[in-house]
Image 1: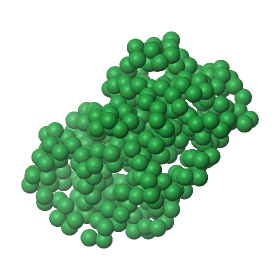
Image 2 (image 1 turned 180 degrees about the vertical axis):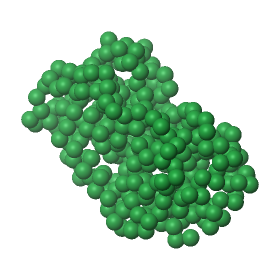
Image 3 (image 1 turned 90 degrees about the vertical axis):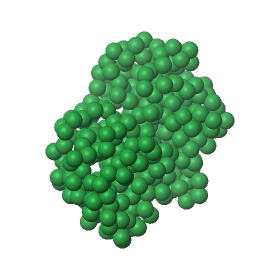
Image 4 (image 1 turned 45 degrees about the horizontal axis):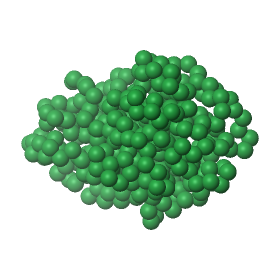
Length: 349
């Protein structure tokens, strides 16, 4: 079974906090704005929370970065980092380009986070290759790259521009847990206490969704994304999408545990799609229409027991697919509102 980097919507990088989705985080967000009472904006000074003393030391996989003073100009390489910064009342000067359709509505910021820009227009850089020149032009004093597959050489280059926060030790690329990522970012900007509150709120929302749906705990669930050859990518338990599903009670089937090694995904060929029948529910991230149509037309797919019985959730919206690939403190209510009812209906089939 060959493996390679998947064509995930978040990598063609990986919503609007409206209605019920916004309600869950409303109080937490209100408590995490600029501590001096000013509205966040591009280039606005970041005031440390009461009791926070700089310098702060942030350990990561390349060593330890010392942030000597409250950063005033923050650039983000990681997509999930942007959500955390915005939730903490900090508008980054630079953000990665995640979804082309977002450019007209706020650049590299998801619709669930966009209101927190408050009119600011960050510079949007490539999510595939680090835009060193654009980052340098922004004159940052902090670069956040926690939710990014950061290489040592790129870390060194970024560190020549500003204090740079890399992913913590012990995690493969793109497997830093959502809560660990939020705390890493919060610590780096002197807002660790506020980040902890945001994490606690999002964790409680996920836990409550599981309590409200006890049938989830009995459903072995597998999350897949079509590849370009009639097969699928399946995401490892350490991937943030899989962690989200487990947080709401959905557990992976034991049959897939041996597929991943050190990677956050594995590729299952078209000839071996029968492995998916080891699950009680399939969640298909089908926002890339070409490969999805090809997969749905294959005989082996149509003969899967979950497909025939209707125990299938298909995600066709790029925004939801990317929200799941972030699984951040801001995207959590967006995911819950849009995914949980679909899972409930599929399990009742």
